[in-house]
Amino acid sequence: MKIINQYHEILGLPENSLQIMEKAGRTCYKSEDKITSDSSKKFVGMLVRQGHHAMIEFSDIIVKFVTNRGVTHELVRHRHCSFAQESTRYVKYEGEMEFIKPVWCKDHLLGRWPEKAPIPPGASPSEQVWMTAMERAESDYKTLLENGWKAQHAREILPNSLKTEIVMKANIREWRHIFGLRCAKASHPQMVELMRPLLKEVQEKIPVVFDDLIF
Image 1: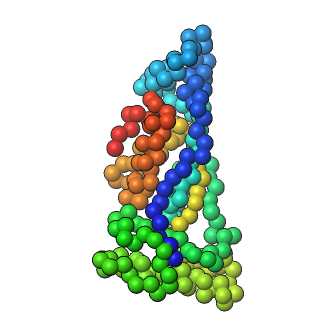
Image 2 (image 1 turned 60 degrees about the horizontal axis):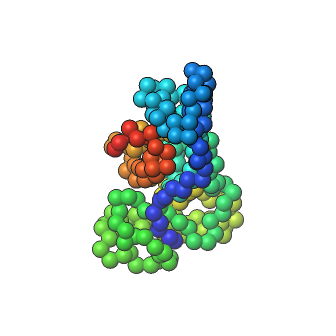
Image 3 (image 1 turned 180 degrees about the vertical axis):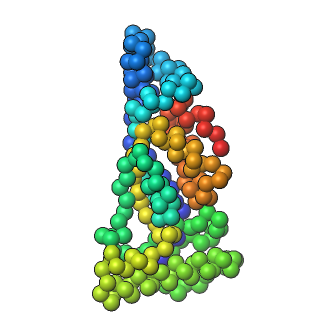
């Protein structure tokens, strides 16, 4: 088995997002004649400050997350999004199975661990329990496949820590809502670690629309 960290990758983010939102917003006021080469940042900032968030729905961001299945169970609860997720019905994990390291565990768990490999030196009792459970899940899953079960049957024993990939699309207004919930201190630690780096990246790529979200 292999233990990895979760991460994100932005797949789609239009370079002219601010210009699109400005064009939409100025349609309401019929002030298109005021559009200049550098007017979009100021105008969109005004929209955000005044709560005219319907206009920021006109730009989408597409993100691929590599995380665990527990996190994706929470992500898919967001309604105004599109999702495409790795399927445990059709993906047969016959080779090396990957698991996401819990954020509260130390990095010495990362890496490849052959079957019945020794637990890393210094691992806490709880980390040892988790490692053993992941190894057992991988072994039992493969045994079920060998005994004739299909992937969609054997998946019944797969844990929340199993690595999964999910592509998620939402407009900027919905991403603001998602970040507001999922970056907050009260959110699950695994979710917070996944979402805050994404928030930081989009704050750099699209100024103004996310700048007020500080955690």
